[in-house]
Image 1 (cartoon, rainbow, N blue to C red):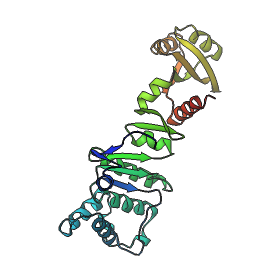
Image 2 (image 1 turned 90 degrees about the horizontal axis):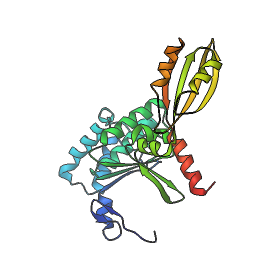
Image 3 (image 1 turned 120 degrees about the vertical axis):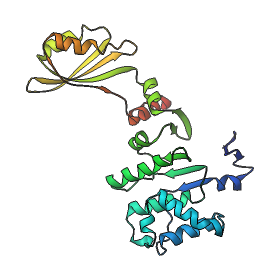
Image 4 (image 1 turned 90 degrees about the vertical axis):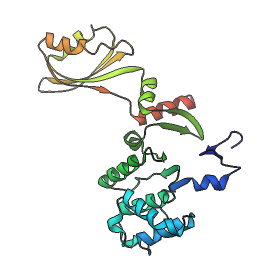
Length: 261
């Protein structure tokens, strides 16, 4: 860094680096585990290194094992654990000192779908007790887990907000998906008469039921007029749902604008 200041729990990261380290728990992408140790022994070892007293260590180990749902595996060798359980042990070691800030680097990488859901829920359960920073390239994971997003491109912060607010700011028009049963040419013609309709994209048709994506001007979104029109004409409305930009869409748009492409 060339300028600026960073603090953690009120401590400057340069002037009080040891105090900062005491208040951070870190789960790296490749969890550093001693595979020949049992879970309880490993967490006790980590806790003692982090300065937890002999009087308190047993209580802290029990607490983090309970938080990470590994109490029933306490006597197991780490080498015998699945990838998902090793990730839980890694999370437990990050929590052992009860840090103010918890940094998780790609915590779900390499896990199967069931394990991803379990780790995701563990992370959500930590909210409120710790400030959790999730570093990941798996953007759907961010959408499912995080309350606030920081997008960084080439070392520069280019956006900070909630996922919902980012979508609202960047999506210039409302897009709605419809599945309508009726003559496609007439449907398109009538939809185009509705105020605020910018574009209609006709998709596939199956047994006289056609998929459409309707784009509406932002701030002039007469969503109620479309179902009313469908009913008035005696057509069938099989499905209607909004289409929001994904975080991948937002990321690509912001990075593209940043590069001036």
